[in-house]
Length: 155
Image 1 (tube, rainbow, N blue to C red):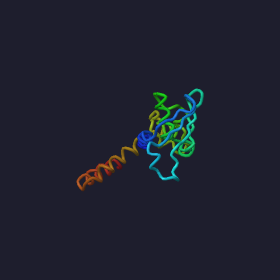
Image 2 (cartoon, rainbow, N blue to C red):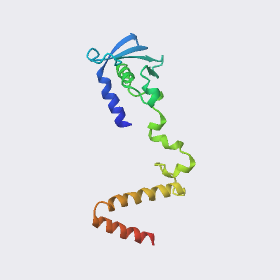
Image 3 (spheres, one colour):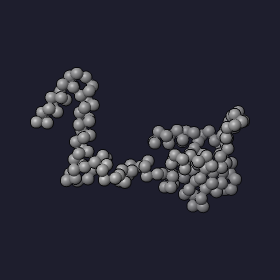
Image 4 (cartoon, helix red, strand yellow):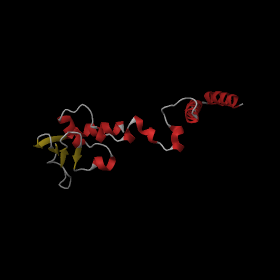
């Protein structure tokens, strides 16, 4: 999602803003709107809540993908916001997304609890084993060494 956000941020440079109602309503117009196809939508209306904590764009990208669109981001930059409003950052795109995992998937959670929890032990050993497999797969000598060590550990 970080890469997608970078694309959205880059894309907002292709729009000029027209202020309809100061700090409340804007139109984002593509800078090459005259040379675009007639069937292409070149202008998007963005409405801003009174508290400037929610931005709604008529393109519907935020509602569809759960990620802010380039039009709304252009308005946020214009308003000199230092960070995205909380309403525009879904939990599934954050580092804390795993704290809502169902019990059967807790073992795959990245943040570790105490060693007494089997899910932490399982996850740590599993990730370590995957690293050994990746290293052992790099060449024949590494494979032989990884296989030998894993067989030794298994006994």
